[in-house]
Length: 258
Image 1 (tube, one colour):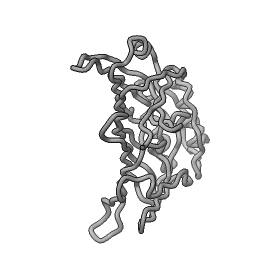
Image 2 (tube, one colour):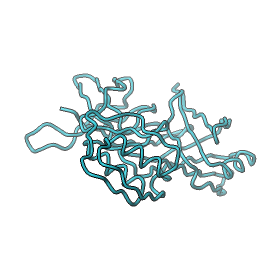
Image 3 (spheres, one colour):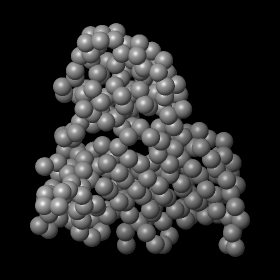
């Protein structure tokens, strides 16, 4: 029988709960805040109070981090068989809510510009990679507004899209980063499907229904399933997983690299 369990870190400290949990939500290849909801059936009072007062929640399965972010809400409601506690977890909300205003001198690269914006935001988020190429700005750049929008604007000069990971921000080029994982038939629930593209051209996107794992938007994946072999960048991910019954899956939208 497949393992249907989650591990929890509340403010970086383990929380043990073996009851029913339903995790749902989605994120994408952008700095728009993601939103996930974790529903706990009959959560003990001590754990409920702990989550109500906590700032951060990390949810993992089989050693892979699925969701990590700030707790935006925690409330409990009564149901016929006890209670359900719903905890809302958002990743990237700080970048969306934090305004910045700065001028970056001419002669700075895209990566240096992004780092200056992150420093101005003061959220302790770091840049994890340097795009190649990393263009030099020939004119001063002025950035004003949401930190997330300013980072996206700066990254576009290198034809990249920024994405927030648990470790920091990655700048993802149009043709993707180096392949970070391989998805095979054992990882999938059904065959890949393809969408998009011109009427007579190759499809532009692939939809995968997969088992729960640590795959995230921005990662470049290789897919090998039957007669399908393709590579692409994960642009969207949704999770619908219940430790008790029903769905236990992740759906991935992959932009194909031709």
